[in-house]
Length: 217
Length: 242
Image (tube, rainbow over all chains, first blue to last red; front, top):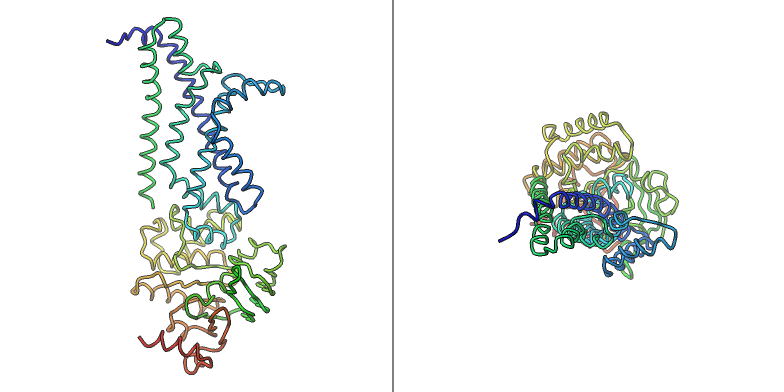
């Protein structure tokens, strides 16, 4: 049987970790969404240098481990006199890493929007940026909500690597509890449940959004 | 108002437009006809720089389109365009479709833009659809919204790229009626179409184009009675006798 006292006696630690994971995830979600969208536009803008920068970014960060980015920000940046704490370095690493995947998804969405949409907008005198912002992106994002949702769920789960930067999130708290109590079995089962408390509502929210938006078109 | 001087356009090695000489005056209704692939849509799309010309000089509204310094957004604010597939924004209501460009490109207030939009919706006969989404409208209604969207910018000229080709036959009439009333009010119009009835009734001039060349540029009567070029005769016999 599971020993629930691990949960009740360490409730405060779990809750602290839960809040921290939630905060990191929210910040990284907003940040990576904004950066990813920007990168997607760079990749398809009618300017060669922008395409090159966007593609280089995506290819580079999508193909290296998140852990390297996190370590780099945490341990290598101080040599350049930039000091980030575990929370800042971890959140930033998550943003930088996830943005590459989000850029890829959004770029696919932009390309899936019918060319006539931007032609109609441009021919009415809207600028490239206005056309993107008001006409193409809203439709593109709608198309790629399912893959975006997957990326956001990955992001929440990936936040667990912040434990090695002592960022105080769920996984970190679980490690602490386990090293204090010498219990491993329950500690990790309960921490898994806390992750599910975030990710399952998140995936239902994505599904709901998908259905709701499907109705308006 | 629109002037092509020895304009050529290539897609790679393929020449879509050959030595185009064409002048369209204010208030004229010009219908461009020709077989598919003849370059008629390309010719039209050059007029608002959706396509760029390769050589020659193209002047629209006193702006030289072939000049790199020409502000293309400014040019386009004065040219309305209606597409074969309507290209309404599916995520916006009819009213928002119409007010977007006036608000963002002309910086009109929301109230003014909406007032203008409702006026043009009235004009195209669907004032009750302001809050509908495009997907809730028939093809004919969507195309009328697209026309209202073009008119809301108070353009100097309206370009129509096969505006009825994607419509069910029974909806073609309602769109053509709107276009006819526009023509009567003196709007400058350039229309690519296969609707010969419309061309005969409304056009001031008919341009016949084949393989990227303008073969005829004449009034509808002359064009339909006795076209000078064999290619035009063949085209007419195919399109009219079925």
